[in-house]
Amino acid sequence: MATSTTARRLPTAQFLLGTVVILVGILLLLETTGLSPTRNILLYVPSLFVLVGGWGLVRSRFRNVVGPIVLIGVAGAWQLVALDYATVDQVVVFWPVFVIAFGLSIIAGQFQSRVRATDDTFTSAFAAFGGVEKRITSRTFTGGDLTAVFGGTELDLRDAEIDTKPARVTVLAVFGGVEIVVPREWNVQMDVFPVLGGAADDRPRREGTHEEVDLVVTGFAAFGGVSVTD
Image (tube, rainbow, N blue to C red; front, side):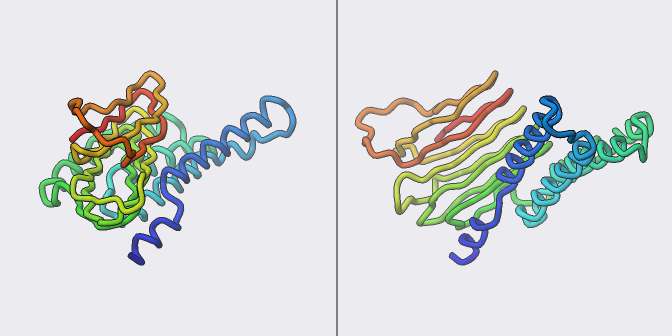
């Protein structure tokens, strides 16, 4: 239980990404309205996304490597160009590195278990340019947050139990997909806001479903999808 509590107290990659986006929006607003010049500060925005990628590595305990490293590489190259340490042409020639990284992720997947099982009460998954799959076995599951940016995340809750209902899972899908697998008898409430995307409970309709809500799924999907299956 101590591990789960600690993991929940630490800021998640999703929270950090949201904070970075809000900060960038504030800086842009100050610049465009003329309230305060922030152009020099905006030059260092790519470093914030490097931080998000690095934190994604730490939070996954370096199990999800390719996605965060790609994010770090793209943001790092962007930062070099922004600071005039490199030109766009000099950076673009290295794009095949991402093809190599993708191939390495495929090979690495052959030597790792397909799904990581964990008994964490609260779970977090961050997938960028890759995929993350988790299976929860906790008897006291309370929720989690799932982020998929140009990637996919799957959370399997079929072996989980909820002590205090409802559990809450927050999702963010941007050009990616999030799939949550739940027991067929669970009552799931979907409260995801889609923008040119989709969010749905794809399980077959059943008669006599209990009224108490077991799981609430909230969040945002843009050019991506969030689905609940059994």
